[in-house]
Amino acid sequence: MIIVSPSLLSANFLNLEKDIEMFNKSNAQWLHYDVMDGNFVPNISFGPQILEQVCKITDKFIDVHIMVANPLKVVDYFDKARVNMLTFHYEAVKDLEELNAVIDKIHAKGIKAAVSIKPNTPVEVLEPVLCKLDMVLVMSVEPGFGGQKFMTEMLSKCDWLHNWRIENNLNYLIQIDGGINYENGKKAVEHHCDSLVAGSYCFNNPVSFDYAVDSLLSLKKENK
Image (cartoon, rainbow, N blue to C red; front, side, top):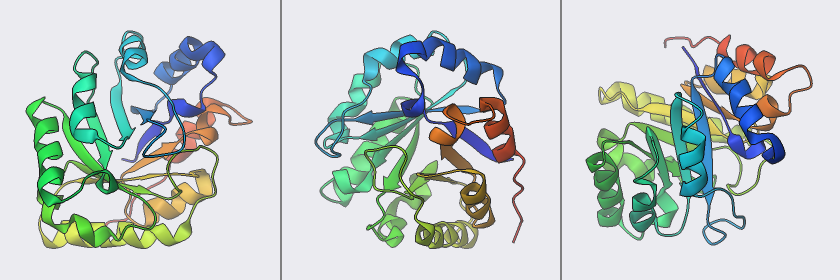
């Protein structure tokens, strides 16, 4: 089954509790929570204190994506919040030693660990750590802002990740984030994505939030 992870960044901040209640009643399995520091990406979003409040009104899986310049330190900021998956950026660490250190620190806290790569980063750089990861997040837009156009050429990264996963008998998930709607989601699933992060398509859908979520959940993966 496809995992749909609506991005809270596209919710109505003046009615955040109402939007989270709408999410709770939907069939979406995960809630995507973007953390931006204004340094690694040119924008600032939520922090750990807001997440603590969010966790009080949802029991669903919390999918946190930290777009920050110092992930090894920032991981500790979320000790008081319930985090199920924590994704940080490959580009935010200086070397393989630090990359492994962040992954190990996340796992030591009992949290699933994931690494994200920007559009200009070749997916092959993750080869040394793929055996340790629970998920890889492929960015299909430049991180930092919602509402950007989906970059179709990123789908080749998903194919590569799928082939590596099969060849090496691994079970990490492949997630994609950026410009996801039904049509792009269909392409992503055809290229072996397991999880779709959808912000505007879900929270600003002209039909309804439920319609958007269910349309993405209806996509079927082909086993190849």
